[in-house]
Amino acid sequence: MLGSYTPKSFDEDTIDSNEPEVGKFVRHPDLIEKAKVQKTKKDPFKKAKEHYEKLKLEKLQKQQELEKSKQEKAQKLQEYKKKKQERFKKLSKKTKKGQPVMTGRLELLLEKIQK
Image 1 (cartoon, rainbow, N blue to C red):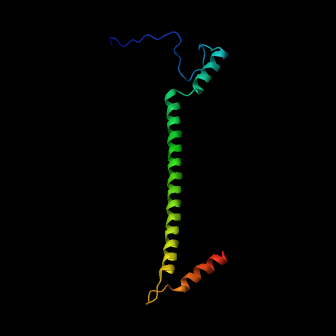
Image 2 (image 1 turned 90 degrees about the horizontal axis):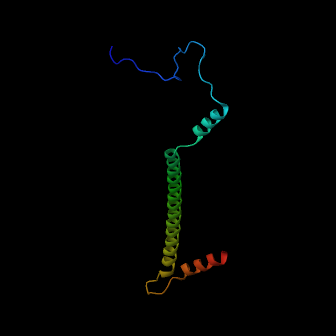
Image 3 (image 1 turned 180 degrees about the vertical axis):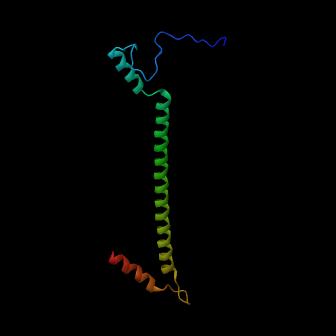
């Protein structure tokens, strides 16, 4: 049993947990408040981690907005090209002799007037 003795400091608890708390030191109320304030402060690592998560979330939202605007832009461009192609087909129709077919042109004029 050599070396099994460990000296205890004066303020360590020597009584069992079943017995009432007799003989323990009482802390000053100001020290208790300071300890609470220190516990509520975030350590730098947690603070930095929260900041990183916040930036990551903002970056993700920004990326989603850009993707959405790209899709809207592509859809508008596709609609424009389709409309332009239909208009071109109506205007470029020709008869057997090479004369332009007027029905397509008249339809376009009618649409313009109705708008």
